[in-house]
Amino acid sequence: MEKKNIIILTAAGIVVVMLVAVILYLTKEMKQKDEEMAEMVEQMEYEKEELANEYADVAIEMEGISYKVNNDSLLAQINKEQKRIQALQEELRTVKATNAKRIKELKEELASVRKVLTYYVAQVDSLSRVNTQLKNENAQLGAKYAEATSEVQRVTEEREVLQEKVNIASQLEARDIEVEAQKKSGKKARYIKNVTLFEVSYKILKNNTARVGNKTVYLRITCPDGSVLHKQANNKFVFEDKQIYYSAKKNFEYAGNEMGDVLYYNVAETLLKGTYEFELFVDGHLIGGKKVDFTR
View 1 (tube, rainbow, N blue to C red):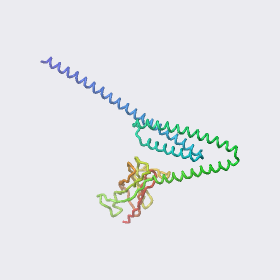
View 2: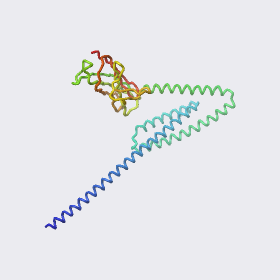
View 3: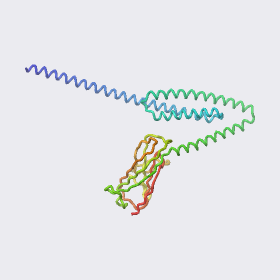
View 4: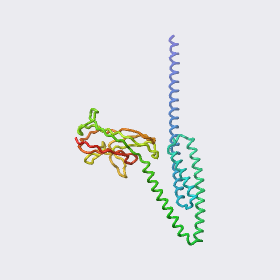
């Protein structure tokens, strides 16, 4: 009987050792596969970034060609191709790096764009040679060239104005901004000395031209004496090329549609009577604000 127990215990020990070995092996395999997957994703992200850089280079080249053209028909074709490149760049910015199929298709689209670019370069070179020949043959070409240069300048200025309008149109806007000063109990505070929390609610309006994705909204509370309520010295963000303080911030996902949200600031400072200004900023732009008087 004792011998039988020894055999059973020995067999059980062997099984345990084998199970431990299998578990260690499987754990090692899983870790290796995770590392391989992480490396694969990193490589995909790198390839996507490289593809984005290539698209940016092509866009710059295409833009440079457009300034060399004074042929309306060719310029219209180039402008159409520029819009196509912009659409592909926008899609590339939003597509996931792990979407290998679409990334491959975008690479193929880039190859097609390069062929078109080569064609336009040849067309521009051809037109340039013709213009040079006409310059030598026609004494009036100087005036025409000056006129063409003026037209390019006019187009450039119009594009700059249009771009500025697009930039303004793409800025978000906040409406229905409401400020509630609360006491420690959570009830509305009637006196500024009792305020322990500012609750700022707002709506960000729908904007089809604004860039979608992850954004950060900053709340800046300016006191009657001009100081800004903030918790730490590094609570700053960039506005009009300057680093300025913010009181609170919040990350949010913007999908282009109207959305409502709330920001809070816990008051630890001694507050003064007077007018407080509550301002909201997104993407380096002031999107809305409200002034509130606390006279008691």
